[in-house]
Length: 135
View 1 (cartoon, rainbow, N blue to C red):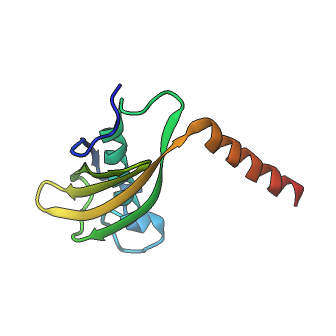
View 2 (view 1 turned 180 degrees about the vertical axis):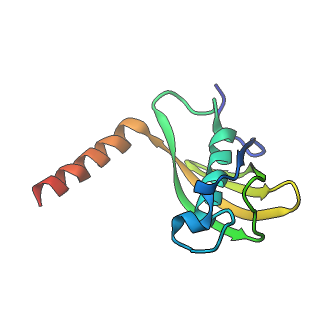
View 3 (view 1 turned 120 degrees about the vertical axis):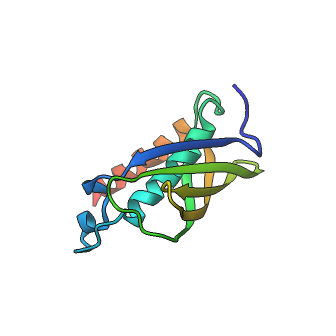
């Protein structure tokens, strides 16, 4: 197992289906890939880049995504997102990400993730859940 290093890359692809369209998320008539689905795909490519790079007991969490959704993609197209790790600063990981639909680039983004201790992270989630139960 290796540590995340600058230059790591990953990619994933997705066929655009009806459930992925902006119209399925409440934007009537916008039968194109939703920004929400596209952002999820971009994040997935970052996770693919990290596959096998974390120690046992670690996970990464997304903290920031700045995305330019530059072109529409109709259903039936396959969108491929590619991420490259451009900066490692302690637990902070910065990715340059882009997506292409086979005809043109449809997105460009910067995504920031943090490496965290899994046990500590979920303990915090559990404590927060307990506070809600007490309200």
